[in-house]
Image: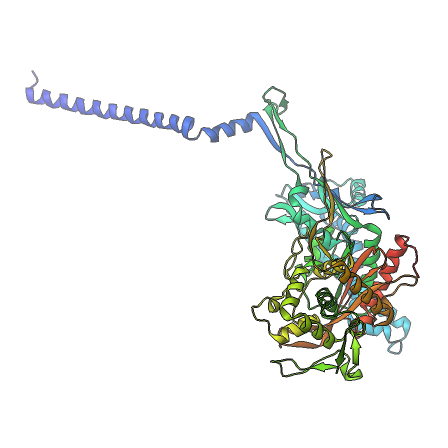
Length: 638
């Protein structure tokens, strides 16, 4: 018989064990319930997506980027040419573990992909080397044959060094035996791809990729910008590509369908397909023939004068539509990554601000004549210099040291001889405040709103003060102490030439959606800045500048041409004041006088061989103007 105390103890142990077992069961049940809750509720989306990945396929469908076209033809209804389009290139890649002969394959890659460009780079290097320039120019240094042999040896050595480096890089890539994919060359042209495929190399393959393609290369690079990477996403940058990136990009589509056990697509009712919307096309106001001629003549002139760069803008005065816009130095948007300085991406025609100099005298004259404070026959006494209140030094005419004063002269002579004292006289007659109001009304101090990225704003802060300092108003009257962009200047001149209306400049004639709908740009009037009478008088005075003044080389035989030269000092930001040896040469003009077809600004940055724009920018204007007048078949008027 078991004692009662021992029996009670056994019951207690049994109860404890039972409680532990029950607790464990409940704990496991709780964990199971929580896991089911977590899987079915908390992580439902995750596991649904994983299941869909096994049974469904979802792909983003890329749209085609819209194209950019320029026009050709005298009547504006000519043929369209793509200046930005899309093109498929091959991406050649290697599978290193399948490469049998690394040395031979690396040599083949060099011969097909690199040889020509290396030889070209070495030729450019030697031609730009100052020592070799001197060697080839000085025939007395060594015999001609010895010079040629020496240069050939130097060239072969440089090519050899570069070849060895490139082949070594290929060998490193092909030696990665555990790497299943090694890119070798992007943007491979069809001709190069055929050469590779013809060799039937084991471990070498390709895929096709679509890239943005610019058929005209450097021509119009500042206008266009390029399509590049912003992080890991491609987007338009700078120029039209950046400004109209949303319109050009289009909208992505998508496809979703069931996947069979074998991996194929099952066509079922639930299949979803959203068609991509391709980007819209842009049709520009740019005239292809005028653009090419202007860019070519600009580059040739800048090189001949040793200028650091230059800009040309050709505009329709009645509408402010841009017919040509180019600057140098430029770049090839197909290889935008090869530039040494990314600042070259900025468009100098709209980005760079400079003190315009004497071309601004036309704006001052327009203000004075519109206010009827002066007329073409208003006379004043020119001593060649003026003392201005609050300024210790005399302000002189540019030719004072060689010519002295001009004596009693009228306003026509002020423009013809580009007299600073005459501009100050007009400004003072008009009053500094009224003069400043005209400068603002002509559009200076604000952006034009052109459809391009990185447009700059001119600086006319000295004219926006409540009390304008006399010396600042005086220097502003002849274009110093204030800044403007080339686009602002040519737009202001257009307002004078078209009868006094400031128009908004534009580059895009139409935006054409892929469904065929069109959004046409209408010429936009901003405001009237001067009267028709004042505009007529000032344009006539500008014709006298070309016929009898400093700008005779801007003339075109058989036509009346109007314009104004400007040779501006360049501010020295480090030393203060102005540079002693740097200048910017400009000419702004129009033709013909009866029914002007264009207004044009020509700007050359610091030409080295001539002192004044009459010998640099003016003749370049004349060359381009002659081409345009002949292109439009404008009848001669004289």
